[in-house]
Image 1 (cartoon, rainbow, N blue to C red):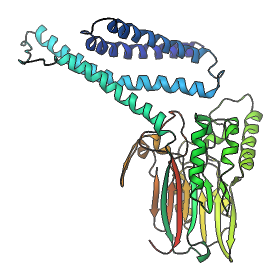
Image 2 (image 1 turned 180 degrees about the vertical axis):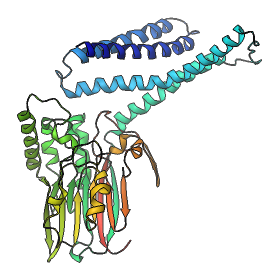
Image 3 (image 1 turned 60 degrees about the vertical axis):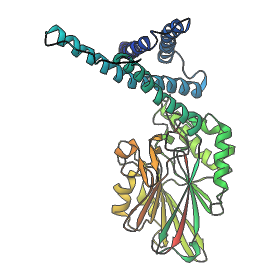
Image 4 (image 1 turned 60 degrees about the horizontal axis):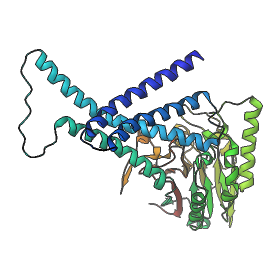
Length: 420
């Protein structure tokens, strides 16, 4: 309790310090305002801060789950957005403080007086300029993140790619594979938008559908309201799925080991109810006109800190005679760590997991995201020799309930016989 109390006090002190700095900019910007606007803005600033602190107190010592995960996520996101944005304003105010500190120190040491450059007209004094710059600088990321929630969270995009495989049998030439990943149903706030995304996907009429993991955030109950929607995902050659790191309930405190295990069994049942063929370190062979294509699927396996449940050797067993092998593996780091070094005949791997960090820039062939500093392969199609990896940017979101510059993705990959 003492450790928790100390952490809570330190958090509030840090946030209060941020507010004190930002308030200096508010004071400067509003100093020439008249009427009731000035006191409303100045007193309102601290009233709003007090409400945030009360919310944090309730979250730390109350019951944030009482009104459901949606309310809890909304509150956490709002607080994060506010203070993350304020940090940008703090940097500008610090510049002003440093400037004034240097001027004061210069005068105190009698090293010369700071002389303001002569100006004409209605030029803005430097400190007021910086104060306004601080307010604007703080407003920009807040506006961007707000837009990312309102417009970006469900702004689904179809991404189409063609992969040429010299060993692809004629029976499978032109086969269309639809992939979606990282649904994270516990984060959704618009059932209508999710339904729209599924309908958009189905209009592509894929022959196969792959789901590459993370159906939920923490517990299977999150997907209950969406089972009917995702059960509409159907394809002539089947719908195949695997588990992701969030599907095991590893990030939640459970009352017992049995409760956690029951939750995972419920997850397996949820895949069955939706009509997904869940591959738990196993494979399926699809045969057309005597030609064989193998679909391998493993449980989550990450090269980094994430849990390693996957057993690729088990999934691979029995696929030796298949002309083409396709692998579903949630974490793209698996490709370099195990797939390429040990299984050179796995032609295409399908992954997700990164979300593209839900933030970045993509213009033409240029793409950037903080995700690239963690994952070598973080979005789109990669090739090494005769092997390919496609990393889906994700259908849903987690943490921040939106996307800025990295929209949610629905992938359609066509396999063609030949050499690219």
